[in-house]
Length: 480
Ligand SMILES: Cc1ncc(COP(=O)(O)O)c(C=O)c1O
Image (cartoon, rainbow, N blue to C red):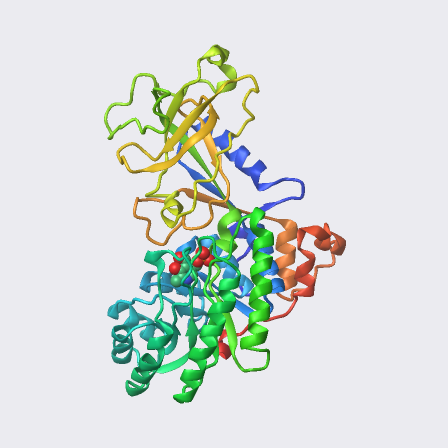
Protein backbone atom coordinates (compact mmCIF):
# COMPACT_ATOMS: atom_id res chain seq x y z
CA UNK A 1 0.00 0.00 0.00
CA UNK A 2 1.20 3.51 -0.70
CA UNK A 3 -0.07 5.02 2.53
CA UNK A 4 -2.19 7.85 1.12
CA UNK A 5 -5.50 6.22 2.05
CA UNK A 6 -6.49 4.01 4.93
CA UNK A 7 -9.70 2.72 6.46
CA UNK A 8 -10.06 5.82 8.63
CA UNK A 9 -10.56 7.97 5.51
CA UNK A 10 -13.89 6.41 4.54
CA UNK A 11 -16.82 4.34 5.78
CA UNK A 12 -16.52 0.67 4.98
CA UNK A 13 -19.80 -0.42 3.42
CA UNK A 14 -20.61 -4.08 3.84
CA UNK A 15 -21.98 -6.24 1.07
CA UNK A 16 -25.66 -5.69 0.37
CA UNK A 17 -25.63 -2.10 1.64
CA UNK A 18 -25.34 0.55 -1.07
CA UNK A 19 -24.14 4.13 -0.86
CA UNK A 20 -27.74 5.10 -1.61
CA UNK A 21 -28.79 3.24 1.57
CA UNK A 22 -26.11 5.20 3.39
CA UNK A 23 -27.43 8.48 2.01
CA UNK A 24 -31.00 7.65 3.05
CA UNK A 25 -29.75 6.83 6.56
CA UNK A 26 -27.91 10.15 6.73
CA UNK A 27 -31.08 11.94 5.65
CA UNK A 28 -33.03 10.39 8.49
CA UNK A 29 -30.33 11.49 10.98
CA UNK A 30 -30.22 15.03 9.56
CA UNK A 31 -34.00 15.36 9.53
CA UNK A 32 -34.07 14.37 13.19
CA UNK A 33 -31.36 16.96 13.94
CA UNK A 34 -33.18 19.60 11.87
CA UNK A 35 -30.07 20.07 9.70
CA UNK A 36 -30.75 21.36 6.19
CA UNK A 37 -27.22 21.78 4.81
CA UNK A 38 -26.57 20.15 1.46
CA UNK A 39 -24.16 17.21 1.61
CA UNK A 40 -22.45 14.68 -0.66
CA UNK A 41 -22.04 10.94 -0.39
CA UNK A 42 -19.06 9.73 -2.42
CA UNK A 43 -18.63 6.11 -3.44
CA UNK A 44 -14.85 5.66 -3.66
CA UNK A 45 -15.39 2.13 -4.98
CA UNK A 46 -16.91 3.67 -8.10
CA UNK A 47 -13.63 5.54 -8.69
CA UNK A 48 -11.61 2.35 -8.18
CA UNK A 49 -13.75 0.66 -10.81
CA UNK A 50 -13.28 3.56 -13.22
CA UNK A 51 -9.51 3.40 -12.75
CA UNK A 52 -9.38 -0.33 -13.49
CA UNK A 53 -11.57 0.18 -16.54
CA UNK A 54 -9.35 3.02 -17.74
CA UNK A 55 -6.18 0.97 -17.48
CA UNK A 56 -7.83 -1.95 -19.23
CA UNK A 57 -9.26 0.16 -22.06
CA UNK A 58 -6.16 2.34 -22.54
CA UNK A 59 -3.20 0.23 -21.42
CA UNK A 60 -0.58 2.63 -22.80
CA UNK A 61 -2.07 5.78 -21.25
CA UNK A 62 -1.12 7.01 -17.78
CA UNK A 63 -3.83 9.14 -16.14
CA UNK A 64 -3.09 12.48 -14.48
CA UNK A 65 -6.26 13.55 -12.68
CA UNK A 66 -7.04 17.31 -13.10
CA UNK A 67 -7.47 18.68 -9.61
CA UNK A 68 -9.79 21.44 -10.77
CA UNK A 69 -12.36 18.72 -11.48
CA UNK A 70 -12.56 17.57 -7.86
CA UNK A 71 -9.99 18.33 -5.19
CA UNK A 72 -11.73 16.63 -2.30
CA UNK A 73 -9.57 14.80 0.20
CA UNK A 74 -11.01 11.31 -0.38
CA UNK A 75 -10.62 11.58 -4.16
CA UNK A 76 -7.02 12.73 -4.17
CA UNK A 77 -6.01 10.26 -1.48
CA UNK A 78 -7.60 7.37 -3.36
CA UNK A 79 -6.12 8.37 -6.71
CA UNK A 80 -2.68 8.88 -5.16
CA UNK A 81 -3.03 5.44 -3.59
CA UNK A 82 -3.90 3.95 -6.97
CA UNK A 83 -0.82 5.62 -8.47
CA UNK A 84 -2.29 8.23 -10.79
CA UNK A 85 -0.55 11.54 -11.33
CA UNK A 86 -2.22 14.94 -10.88
CA UNK A 87 -2.71 17.83 -13.30
CA UNK A 88 -2.71 21.16 -11.44
CA UNK A 89 -3.61 24.60 -12.74
CA UNK A 90 -2.13 26.77 -10.00
CA UNK A 91 -0.02 26.97 -6.86
CA UNK A 92 -2.93 26.11 -4.53
CA UNK A 93 -3.60 22.87 -6.37
CA UNK A 94 0.08 21.91 -6.37
CA UNK A 95 0.23 22.63 -2.63
CA UNK A 96 -2.95 20.61 -2.10
CA UNK A 97 -1.56 17.39 -3.58
CA UNK A 98 1.86 17.92 -2.05
CA UNK A 99 0.19 18.30 1.36
CA UNK A 100 -0.78 14.63 1.25
CA UNK A 101 2.72 13.63 0.14
CA UNK A 102 2.40 13.34 -3.67
CA UNK A 103 5.94 13.66 -5.08
CA UNK A 104 6.71 16.38 -7.64
CA UNK A 105 7.34 13.90 -10.45
CA UNK A 106 3.66 12.94 -10.29
CA UNK A 107 2.52 16.53 -10.69
CA UNK A 108 1.91 18.15 -14.06
CA UNK A 109 1.45 21.94 -13.97
CA UNK A 110 -0.90 21.81 -16.93
CA UNK A 111 -2.30 25.34 -17.13
CA UNK A 112 -1.42 27.02 -20.42
CA UNK A 113 -1.49 30.39 -18.63
CA UNK A 114 0.57 30.59 -15.45
CA UNK A 115 1.34 33.38 -12.99
CA UNK A 116 5.08 34.03 -12.57
CA UNK A 117 4.79 33.56 -8.80
CA UNK A 118 3.18 30.17 -9.35
CA UNK A 119 5.89 29.14 -11.83
CA UNK A 120 8.49 30.05 -9.20
CA UNK A 121 6.56 28.04 -6.62
CA UNK A 122 6.58 25.03 -8.95
CA UNK A 123 10.33 25.49 -9.49
CA UNK A 124 11.06 25.64 -5.76
CA UNK A 125 8.89 22.59 -5.11
CA UNK A 126 10.42 20.38 -7.78
CA UNK A 127 7.49 20.41 -10.23
CA UNK A 128 9.00 20.38 -13.71
CA UNK A 129 6.39 19.26 -16.22
CA UNK A 130 4.45 22.20 -17.70
CA UNK A 131 2.80 23.38 -20.92
CA UNK A 132 3.10 26.45 -23.14
CA UNK A 133 1.37 27.58 -26.30
CA UNK A 134 2.74 31.09 -26.87
CA UNK A 135 5.91 33.17 -26.61
CA UNK A 136 4.84 35.11 -23.53
CA UNK A 137 4.37 31.92 -21.57
CA UNK A 138 7.66 30.60 -22.85
CA UNK A 139 9.66 33.60 -21.73
CA UNK A 140 8.00 33.57 -18.29
CA UNK A 141 9.15 29.98 -17.87
CA UNK A 142 12.62 30.67 -19.33
CA UNK A 143 13.15 33.39 -16.71
CA UNK A 144 11.54 31.73 -13.69
CA UNK A 145 12.06 27.99 -14.08
CA UNK A 146 15.17 26.95 -16.00
CA UNK A 147 14.64 23.30 -15.02
CA UNK A 148 11.15 23.10 -16.54
CA UNK A 149 10.28 20.38 -19.02
CA UNK A 150 7.72 21.73 -21.40
CA UNK A 151 4.96 20.29 -23.53
CA UNK A 152 3.95 22.31 -26.55
CA UNK A 153 0.16 22.79 -26.47
CA UNK A 154 -1.44 22.38 -29.87
CA UNK A 155 -4.99 23.35 -30.82
CA UNK A 156 -6.02 20.12 -32.39
CA UNK A 157 -9.76 20.57 -32.42
CA UNK A 158 -11.58 22.71 -34.90
CA UNK A 159 -14.94 20.99 -34.39
CA UNK A 160 -18.01 23.05 -33.49
CA UNK A 161 -18.17 21.26 -30.13
CA UNK A 162 -14.94 22.92 -29.00
CA UNK A 163 -15.82 25.42 -26.28
CA UNK A 164 -14.44 28.88 -27.19
CA UNK A 165 -13.40 29.75 -23.63
CA UNK A 166 -11.67 26.39 -23.27
CA UNK A 167 -9.67 26.84 -26.47
CA UNK A 168 -6.07 26.11 -25.79
CA UNK A 169 -3.05 25.47 -27.93
CA UNK A 170 -1.21 26.91 -30.87
CA UNK A 171 -1.79 26.16 -34.54
CA UNK A 172 0.46 23.73 -36.38
CA UNK A 173 1.68 26.70 -38.43
CA UNK A 174 3.07 28.41 -35.33
CA UNK A 175 4.66 25.31 -33.85
CA UNK A 176 8.03 25.60 -35.61
CA UNK A 177 8.45 29.24 -34.62
CA UNK A 178 7.58 28.49 -30.99
CA UNK A 179 9.92 25.52 -30.89
CA UNK A 180 12.73 27.66 -32.38
CA UNK A 181 12.07 30.33 -29.76
CA UNK A 182 12.23 27.68 -27.03
CA UNK A 183 15.58 26.58 -28.41
CA UNK A 184 16.90 30.16 -28.39
CA UNK A 185 15.77 30.63 -24.79
CA UNK A 186 17.23 27.27 -23.72
CA UNK A 187 13.84 25.95 -22.62
CA UNK A 188 13.63 22.17 -22.78
CA UNK A 189 10.65 20.88 -24.77
CA UNK A 190 9.88 17.19 -24.13
CA UNK A 191 6.64 16.64 -26.01
CA UNK A 192 3.20 17.77 -27.11
CA UNK A 193 -0.09 18.31 -25.32
CA UNK A 194 -3.69 18.79 -26.42
CA UNK A 195 -7.12 18.92 -24.82
CA UNK A 196 -10.06 18.53 -27.15
CA UNK A 197 -12.74 19.87 -24.82
CA UNK A 198 -15.43 17.97 -23.02
CA UNK A 199 -18.68 18.70 -24.83
CA UNK A 200 -19.92 16.08 -27.28
CA UNK A 201 -16.39 15.09 -28.14
CA UNK A 202 -16.26 12.94 -31.28
CA UNK A 203 -13.92 9.95 -30.79
CA UNK A 204 -12.45 10.53 -34.24
CA UNK A 205 -11.14 13.92 -33.06
CA UNK A 206 -8.46 12.05 -31.09
CA UNK A 207 -7.11 10.48 -34.28
CA UNK A 208 -6.90 13.88 -36.00
CA UNK A 209 -5.22 15.40 -32.96
CA UNK A 210 -2.65 12.61 -32.81
CA UNK A 211 -1.81 13.05 -36.47
CA UNK A 212 -1.18 16.75 -35.78
CA UNK A 213 0.82 15.89 -32.65
CA UNK A 214 3.06 13.59 -34.68
CA UNK A 215 3.91 16.48 -37.04
CA UNK A 216 4.76 18.67 -34.04
CA UNK A 217 6.91 15.85 -32.63
CA UNK A 218 8.83 15.67 -35.90
CA UNK A 219 9.46 19.44 -35.84
CA UNK A 220 10.74 19.24 -32.27
CA UNK A 221 13.00 16.29 -33.05
CA UNK A 222 14.43 18.13 -36.11
CA UNK A 223 15.32 21.03 -33.84
CA UNK A 224 17.17 18.70 -31.50
CA UNK A 225 14.64 18.26 -28.68
CA UNK A 226 14.26 14.85 -27.04
CA UNK A 227 10.53 14.50 -27.67
CA UNK A 228 9.19 11.64 -25.57
CA UNK A 229 5.87 12.61 -23.98
CA UNK A 230 2.39 13.03 -25.48
CA UNK A 231 -0.51 14.36 -23.39
CA UNK A 232 -3.93 13.63 -24.91
CA UNK A 233 -5.92 15.75 -22.40
CA UNK A 234 -9.32 14.93 -20.93
CA UNK A 235 -12.90 14.90 -22.12
CA UNK A 236 -13.78 11.25 -21.40
CA UNK A 237 -17.41 10.86 -20.30
CA UNK A 238 -18.10 9.71 -16.76
CA UNK A 239 -21.68 8.51 -16.38
CA UNK A 240 -22.88 4.93 -16.48
CA UNK A 241 -24.88 5.50 -19.68
CA UNK A 242 -21.74 6.69 -21.53
CA UNK A 243 -19.65 3.59 -20.93
CA UNK A 244 -20.02 2.47 -24.57
CA UNK A 245 -18.96 5.95 -25.67
CA UNK A 246 -15.82 5.71 -23.54
CA UNK A 247 -14.97 2.35 -25.09
CA UNK A 248 -15.47 3.83 -28.53
CA UNK A 249 -13.05 6.66 -27.70
CA UNK A 250 -10.54 4.18 -26.29
CA UNK A 251 -10.68 2.10 -29.48
CA UNK A 252 -9.99 5.17 -31.64
CA UNK A 253 -7.15 6.30 -29.35
CA UNK A 254 -5.51 2.86 -29.31
CA UNK A 255 -5.51 2.53 -33.07
CA UNK A 256 -4.32 6.12 -33.57
CA UNK A 257 -1.49 5.45 -31.10
CA UNK A 258 -0.54 2.33 -33.06
CA UNK A 259 -0.44 4.42 -36.21
CA UNK A 260 1.28 7.60 -35.06
CA UNK A 261 3.10 6.62 -31.86
CA UNK A 262 3.53 2.83 -32.02
CA UNK A 263 4.60 0.83 -29.01
CA UNK A 264 8.36 0.93 -28.68
CA UNK A 265 8.77 4.35 -30.36
CA UNK A 266 9.96 5.79 -27.06
CA UNK A 267 6.99 8.09 -26.52
CA UNK A 268 5.07 7.84 -23.24
CA UNK A 269 1.38 8.75 -23.29
CA UNK A 270 -0.49 10.59 -20.53
CA UNK A 271 -4.09 11.85 -20.29
CA UNK A 272 -6.02 14.16 -17.98
CA UNK A 273 -9.35 12.42 -17.43
CA UNK A 274 -11.39 14.50 -14.97
CA UNK A 275 -15.14 13.92 -15.17
CA UNK A 276 -14.51 10.31 -16.25
CA UNK A 277 -13.18 9.43 -12.80
CA UNK A 278 -15.56 11.22 -10.47
CA UNK A 279 -18.90 12.11 -12.07
CA UNK A 280 -20.85 9.00 -11.10
CA UNK A 281 -19.17 8.57 -7.69
CA UNK A 282 -20.80 11.60 -6.03
CA UNK A 283 -24.43 12.05 -5.04
CA UNK A 284 -25.65 15.36 -3.65
CA UNK A 285 -28.57 15.87 -1.29
CA UNK A 286 -29.97 19.41 -1.04
CA UNK A 287 -33.06 20.79 0.69
CA UNK A 288 -35.86 22.97 -0.53
CA UNK A 289 -35.51 26.25 1.36
CA UNK A 290 -38.30 28.23 -0.29
CA UNK A 291 -41.14 27.72 -2.75
CA UNK A 292 -43.12 30.01 -4.98
CA UNK A 293 -46.13 29.33 -7.14
CA UNK A 294 -46.18 31.04 -10.51
CA UNK A 295 -48.97 31.22 -13.08
CA UNK A 296 -48.94 28.19 -15.34
CA UNK A 297 -48.58 30.45 -18.40
CA UNK A 298 -45.07 31.33 -17.21
CA UNK A 299 -43.34 28.01 -16.69
CA UNK A 300 -39.76 28.59 -15.66
CA UNK A 301 -40.44 32.06 -14.35
CA UNK A 302 -37.90 32.52 -11.64
CA UNK A 303 -40.20 34.22 -9.21
CA UNK A 304 -37.87 37.17 -9.04
CA UNK A 305 -36.90 36.98 -5.38
CA UNK A 306 -33.78 38.85 -4.50
CA UNK A 307 -33.32 37.80 -0.93
CA UNK A 308 -36.44 39.57 0.32
CA UNK A 309 -39.25 38.10 2.34
CA UNK A 310 -40.18 34.54 1.53
CA UNK A 311 -43.80 34.46 0.36
CA UNK A 312 -46.29 33.40 2.97
CA UNK A 313 -47.02 30.17 1.12
CA UNK A 314 -43.58 28.84 2.16
CA UNK A 315 -43.80 28.34 5.88
CA UNK A 316 -40.95 27.20 8.05
CA UNK A 317 -40.53 24.93 9.90
CA UNK A 318 -41.07 22.29 7.23
CA UNK A 319 -44.52 21.12 6.32
CA UNK A 320 -45.28 17.39 6.26
CA UNK A 321 -43.96 15.48 3.24
CA UNK A 322 -46.12 15.21 0.10
CA UNK A 323 -47.30 11.71 0.92
CA UNK A 324 -48.81 12.89 4.17
CA UNK A 325 -50.70 15.83 2.65
CA UNK A 326 -53.60 14.21 0.81
CA UNK A 327 -55.52 17.47 0.61
CA UNK A 328 -52.91 18.64 -1.86
CA UNK A 329 -53.63 15.71 -4.16
CA UNK A 330 -56.58 17.47 -5.63
CA UNK A 331 -54.69 20.68 -6.25
CA UNK A 332 -54.76 21.88 -9.79
CA UNK A 333 -51.72 21.68 -11.98
CA UNK A 334 -49.42 24.55 -11.16
CA UNK A 335 -45.98 25.77 -11.94
CA UNK A 336 -43.63 25.91 -8.98
CA UNK A 337 -40.24 27.46 -8.36
CA UNK A 338 -38.10 25.97 -5.59
CA UNK A 339 -35.00 27.48 -4.05
CA UNK A 340 -32.45 24.95 -2.80
CA UNK A 341 -29.82 25.10 -0.08
CA UNK A 342 -27.03 25.10 -2.70
CA UNK A 343 -26.59 26.61 -6.16
CA UNK A 344 -24.24 27.39 -9.03
CA UNK A 345 -21.89 29.29 -6.73
CA UNK A 346 -21.44 26.08 -4.76
CA UNK A 347 -22.08 22.43 -5.45
CA UNK A 348 -23.88 23.14 -8.74
CA UNK A 349 -20.89 24.98 -10.24
CA UNK A 350 -20.71 22.10 -12.73
CA UNK A 351 -23.54 23.88 -14.58
CA UNK A 352 -21.03 26.59 -15.46
CA UNK A 353 -19.05 23.88 -17.30
CA UNK A 354 -22.01 23.13 -19.57
CA UNK A 355 -23.03 20.09 -17.56
CA UNK A 356 -26.83 19.85 -17.43
CA UNK A 357 -28.41 19.63 -14.00
CA UNK A 358 -29.07 15.96 -13.22
CA UNK A 359 -32.76 15.14 -12.80
CA UNK A 360 -33.47 15.19 -9.06
CA UNK A 361 -34.88 12.21 -7.24
CA UNK A 362 -36.96 12.16 -4.09
CA UNK A 363 -35.73 10.13 -1.14
CA UNK A 364 -39.07 8.36 -0.88
CA UNK A 365 -41.19 7.39 -3.83
CA UNK A 366 -43.97 9.97 -4.21
CA UNK A 367 -47.52 8.70 -3.86
CA UNK A 368 -48.51 7.63 -7.38
CA UNK A 369 -51.82 9.51 -7.19
CA UNK A 370 -50.19 12.84 -6.29
CA UNK A 371 -50.26 15.23 -9.23
CA UNK A 372 -46.98 16.42 -10.61
CA UNK A 373 -46.30 20.04 -11.51
CA UNK A 374 -44.01 21.82 -13.86
CA UNK A 375 -41.16 22.82 -11.58
CA UNK A 376 -38.05 24.95 -11.69
CA UNK A 377 -35.05 24.81 -9.39
CA UNK A 378 -33.02 27.80 -8.26
CA UNK A 379 -30.07 28.24 -5.92
CA UNK A 380 -30.33 29.97 -2.54
CA UNK A 381 -32.28 33.22 -2.47
CA UNK A 382 -30.37 36.31 -3.42
CA UNK A 383 -28.92 35.53 -6.85
CA UNK A 384 -31.37 36.00 -9.68
CA UNK A 385 -29.03 34.22 -12.10
CA UNK A 386 -28.71 31.09 -9.94
CA UNK A 387 -30.89 28.94 -12.21
CA UNK A 388 -30.44 25.20 -11.89
CA UNK A 389 -33.22 23.59 -13.91
CA UNK A 390 -36.54 24.33 -15.59
CA UNK A 391 -39.41 22.23 -16.86
CA UNK A 392 -39.06 19.39 -14.36
CA UNK A 393 -42.11 17.30 -13.60
CA UNK A 394 -42.18 16.94 -9.81
CA UNK A 395 -44.81 16.29 -7.19
CA UNK A 396 -45.41 19.31 -4.97
CA UNK A 397 -42.51 19.68 -2.57
CA UNK A 398 -42.48 21.35 0.80
CA UNK A 399 -39.88 23.54 2.40
CA UNK A 400 -37.47 21.17 4.15
CA UNK A 401 -37.91 18.34 1.64
CA UNK A 402 -34.71 16.78 0.30
CA UNK A 403 -33.80 16.30 -3.34
CA UNK A 404 -31.14 13.87 -4.46
CA UNK A 405 -28.88 14.52 -7.44
CA UNK A 406 -26.73 11.72 -8.83
CA UNK A 407 -23.64 12.12 -11.04
CA UNK A 408 -22.45 15.19 -9.13
CA UNK A 409 -18.72 14.44 -8.80
CA UNK A 410 -17.23 16.67 -11.50
CA UNK A 411 -16.63 20.42 -11.10
CA UNK A 412 -18.68 20.54 -7.90
CA UNK A 413 -15.90 20.40 -5.29
CA UNK A 414 -12.99 22.77 -5.78
CA UNK A 415 -9.87 23.87 -3.91
CA UNK A 416 -11.18 27.37 -3.29
CA UNK A 417 -14.96 27.51 -3.46
CA UNK A 418 -16.26 30.94 -4.48
CA UNK A 419 -19.38 30.61 -2.38
CA UNK A 420 -18.02 29.77 1.07
CA UNK A 421 -17.94 26.40 2.82
CA UNK A 422 -18.49 23.25 0.79
CA UNK A 423 -21.15 20.69 1.55
CA UNK A 424 -19.85 17.96 3.83
CA UNK A 425 -18.69 14.80 2.01
CA UNK A 426 -19.18 11.33 3.46
CA UNK A 427 -16.82 8.89 1.72
CA UNK A 428 -17.77 5.24 1.48
CA UNK A 429 -16.31 2.15 -0.12
CA UNK A 430 -17.46 -1.45 -0.17
CA UNK A 431 -15.21 -4.02 1.46
CA UNK A 432 -14.94 -5.71 -1.92
CA UNK A 433 -13.64 -2.53 -3.56
CA UNK A 434 -11.13 -2.01 -0.75
CA UNK A 435 -9.86 -5.56 -1.22
CA UNK A 436 -9.58 -4.88 -4.94
CA UNK A 437 -7.40 -1.84 -4.18
CA UNK A 438 -5.13 -3.96 -2.03
CA UNK A 439 -4.93 -6.70 -4.64
CA UNK A 440 -4.23 -4.12 -7.34
CA UNK A 441 -1.38 -2.67 -5.29
CA UNK A 442 0.14 -6.08 -4.88
CA UNK A 443 -0.89 -6.76 -1.30
CA UNK A 444 -1.63 -10.50 -1.12
CA UNK A 445 -5.12 -11.39 0.11
CA UNK A 446 -5.21 -12.05 3.86
CA UNK A 447 -5.85 -15.65 4.90
CA UNK A 448 -9.28 -14.69 6.24
CA UNK A 449 -10.17 -13.03 2.92
CA UNK A 450 -12.52 -15.08 0.87
CA UNK A 451 -10.73 -14.91 -2.47
CA UNK A 452 -13.89 -15.86 -4.32
CA UNK A 453 -15.67 -12.81 -2.95
CA UNK A 454 -12.95 -10.49 -4.26
CA UNK A 455 -13.59 -11.57 -7.79
CA UNK A 456 -17.35 -11.93 -7.84
CA UNK A 457 -19.63 -10.93 -9.32
CA UNK A 458 -17.44 -11.02 -12.39
CA UNK A 459 -19.49 -8.38 -14.14
CA UNK A 460 -18.72 -5.76 -11.51
CA UNK A 461 -15.19 -5.22 -12.71
CA UNK A 462 -13.25 -6.10 -9.56
CA UNK A 463 -11.78 -9.12 -11.30
CA UNK A 464 -9.72 -6.61 -13.24
CA UNK A 465 -7.77 -5.82 -10.09
CA UNK A 466 -6.21 -9.23 -10.43
CA UNK A 467 -5.42 -9.04 -14.11
CA UNK A 468 -4.06 -5.52 -13.69
CA UNK A 469 -2.13 -6.38 -10.57
CA UNK A 470 1.09 -4.66 -11.53
CA UNK A 471 3.09 -2.65 -9.04
CA UNK A 472 3.87 0.15 -9.46
CA UNK A 473 1.13 1.16 -11.89
CA UNK A 474 3.60 3.48 -13.55
CA UNK A 475 6.62 5.45 -12.64
CA UNK A 476 6.24 9.06 -13.77
CA UNK A 477 9.91 9.65 -13.00
CA UNK A 478 10.50 7.56 -16.06
CA UNK A 479 8.16 9.69 -18.11
CA UNK A 480 9.63 13.05 -17.24
C1 LIG B 1 -7.09 21.93 -20.26
C2 LIG B 1 -8.01 20.91 -19.65
N1 LIG B 1 -7.56 19.65 -19.49
C3 LIG B 1 -8.34 18.68 -18.96
C4 LIG B 1 -9.63 18.95 -18.55
C5 LIG B 1 -10.45 17.82 -18.00
O1 LIG B 1 -11.61 17.64 -18.74
P1 LIG B 1 -12.67 16.50 -18.37
O2 LIG B 1 -13.11 16.73 -16.98
O3 LIG B 1 -13.75 16.68 -19.35
O4 LIG B 1 -11.94 15.20 -18.53
C6 LIG B 1 -10.11 20.25 -18.71
C7 LIG B 1 -11.46 20.59 -18.28
O5 LIG B 1 -11.91 21.70 -18.40
C8 LIG B 1 -9.28 21.26 -19.28
O6 LIG B 1 -9.71 22.51 -19.45
